[in-house]
Image (tube, rainbow, N blue to C red; front, top):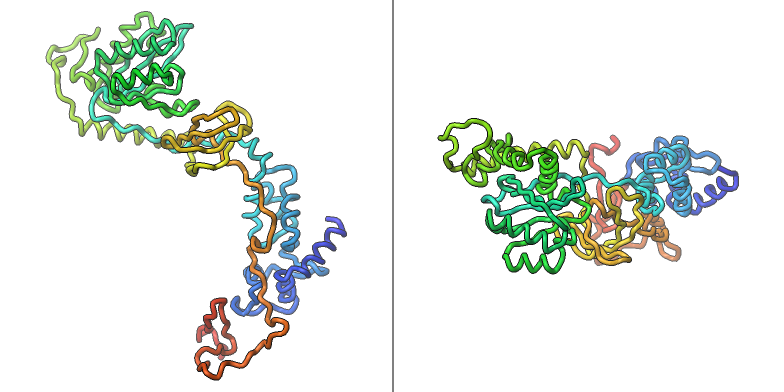
Length: 437
């Protein structure tokens, strides 16, 4: 640090009523009790044992205590090089200090546009397991997949995990609707259909289909397949089956194989009976039977609880604060580089899902893909100083000890030596055990 800068710190320290008071106490001795310290220096009382005076500078350990008027400038230099919070704190620990400097550094880094744009993708939030529906085919998930240049429609029941796969000659809404009608005609119309935001599902034709067939169509946030986990799981299973020589045998085997966590096969959960397959089976075992719904729900909840624990531990999840309409954010999806697309939050349309307005139009994004934009730091002012302004012992032109009003009995309200009066006027007396004998 140059001699000119040190001289500036020395001069501003004498102009700063808080540091000047602390400097005087450091030279002459600090009072024994905090309440006996002038209000201006109380924030430094806790570190009084580390304070020294060196050539007009107030020093804490081997770090210069910076006056309020210079803190904003010093803070900018601490963040030179755009290092993270910890590195900036280590840099400051070498030479400068003031009350609550660590918090100021954290706020400064958080408000840096350069640093924010280059932050990595936010960590995943804790997994929210889907609830088990009351009955089969009450809620189903669907998705489109491509394999070897061919497109398929995949549908999975949230209750039984029963899987359906349909070949798509094209991916138009009309074709997708036709395949869904075929599946619904066999299993019944679900109450809820969950899909992504593909154009096949967001078209006016598909919306008319959902109204005519009277089911609720729920879409997940774009670029966030985890929101429709059942369908994503179904896609993985379907790809493995479609790679086999006999696709239909693969589907039969999947549907008739018990799910370990549930203790029953998708066919048993969906239809109440086992499917006859290539393995020998007693005829009695093929008869319909009732599934204990309560036991099934307990097993399902236990399995999803274990799944959540594994997911949360593996991904190091962290909950993100909810956003409010009007919040200014950056948008970035997984795989994209840099938080550069500005947007404004319009509304929350589902848990962790928001409609945001970007320069190119409205978009729907998951909370993971939205980061609050830094707010430009406000001009420094004395009101923002965490150290309260000094209250002078006397005011020019005012008698420091005005005589009490003769009409008021002041016997109980006059503080005794060693007591002090708070801002509100309350007299605080020192405990008797602290009085000198």
